[in-house]
Length: 256
Image 1 (cartoon, rainbow, N blue to C red):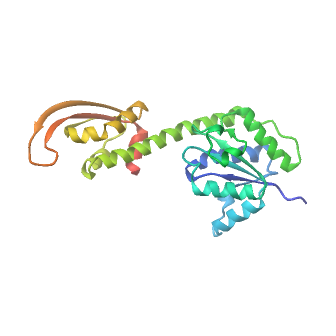
Image 2: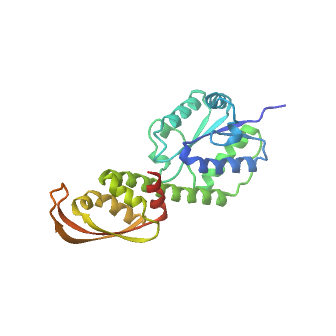
Image 3: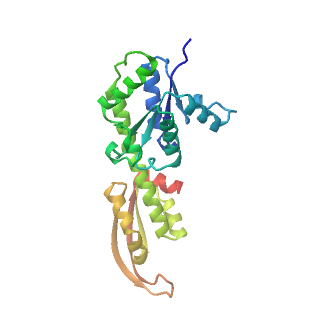
């Protein structure tokens, strides 16, 4: 009996949900006749087994690799390592671009590979045709709309989460630990005034606050109040900073 062809899904942990959508679509479309290796999926990585041995075996045995590429993943070591493993074996390695990254944006040498966008239905049909060739069958007609909608929804949420995470880091660096601890207590979707906020603090975090407000993760206003001279490094102008955090930003601050 001929062994099932294996398709290796190369992705970073943060993009496991998108890889999972592709795994489910391949397994369903090919009626389980194709094995799909996804390191973040329990069936691909049984408990009690050596995870590196499992990945190494899958890279040696697979017939093709889907390489999930985003601005956040494309320079990660494991993505490039797994891409190189497929390249060295001369098997198909297909970059699946998403979350703002297009095939034309891929860096060399990944850009030498023919990639597709996760939200491009006809492009995804080509991916399934490639899988079908490994099985020696005709490609099934896939529900392109369902898969592209899931990819688009993932990308929208993922880009927002990345933006929030990046600016949370900037805010935390711009504020002292005491004030950041105050922000951690601010509930989501609630207008909270912070009085006597030092203007020097505000000016340091304003670029990050502006970016978050532009991305609709934050609403804020600033009004100059009085001047406090107390001999501290932050003597000077104080003001009223009013904040309203989105749920995503609130959750990002809680995790920081």
